Length: 492
Ligand code: HEM
Ligand code: PLO
Image (cartoon, rainbow, N blue to C red; front, side):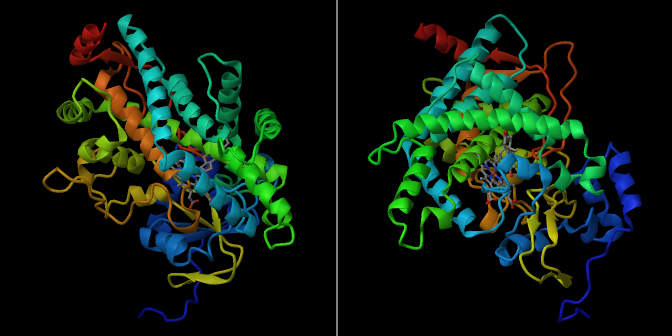
């Protein structure tokens, strides 16, 4: 019998000490893996306490979609936590800000701005290609002298310059101290932020290390200085007639709300204070840098482990693009294997393995379970993407899963796949990220073959859990492909 009225609470994990010690002692099990394992004992959806907060963990796509899509609005809240409050001046941003008119309005402006400067506009393709060119010339220099490189700084600079162009209409040269400074503070933030809401089951104060909090505060103040500087520069030469980037779009919205303060969208009511604008830009800049860079690093990691995948992408590139020109966005349709590889990367190593926690905004239900207002919901995307019932041999890296049986077109073989989330809180940068991943990877693989340097071990496939799941550092050899070397010689 299935009950008509939801009545029961989800199975509850036993009292704190046991789980607290599970999480903190069994450090070889990272939270997303542990949450997946706990299903065996407690079922796909279970609840636990994190400090004084009641949390539901969802490990199956049916309940995940009920939270994100069917009851999207009911579950569109975000928790307030000590660390995200520090990062976002008490939730004045989009990603960690609670459901509100301000959040809605900021999402709308960002969405429109990304469409205007990004997805709907040829210039973003030009920007990405210029960065790909610069990245490839650094790889080329290293390849010429047989130097093994940690690609991370160059990948990050390429990705940063794309989002810099969209947010600030600016870019960084190699070795720019402002860029180096950004790399440093951003890693500090990734290492410390949101840990209290995702990892710790004890009240954060008891075990959250103070050193982490100090580091976070230091890094956030470095970031705030950078954002404030960009903002002040924009205010000085702002004009109603030109919109150069996201900051201009937000300034314009603020101006029009101020001129309209009799109407219902006054600057006050929609939250267009300077702090709100800074925090929204901080989100887009931060997400723009850390997410795409992380996926590119995973891509290189997996390509080194799977030379056969690399070769197949290169064959596809040779057949469709050739070596007389560089790949363009319009080639996307004719490079299904590369697209399938990107999909597989986002499955096997999701950027945000637990998304960002959601919160029930009123009393509601999830399947047959009752859910009280204020309950936090963690969607374990890792469990969805590694569900053995949905994915054959889920830890195997196999882009072919995303191809149809003829190998000519793309499919999504399981409903248990949500790399960008879904519903009201769906990722705002999905289209941009996909353009970047496609162009950067196609440019690199058209020109180079990536291998592990002689004498080095293959890089680890285990990620470091945090607000994004990051791969470890490692060096690679980029070798110029024979056809490309000939092409380069002819050009010279
Ligand atoms: C939220 C994935 C790139 C901006 C999210 C969420 C996921 C995600 C899983 C959380 C959804 C939820 O909590 O339900 C990704 C992946 C990316 C990527 C896999 C790269 C491959 C980007 C980029 C940007 C961006 C490039 C900025 C341009 C955001 C924002 C949110 C978000 C602002 C918060 C949305 C909200 O809470 O309303 N993303 N993201 N993301 N993403 Fe992305
Ligand atoms: C990354 C470090 C930056 O310095 C600040 C920042 C802002 C927005 C965050 C991002 C960090 C990590 C990835 C997040 C993004 C908002 C949406 C995105 C959490 C912390 C994802 C994947 O959900």
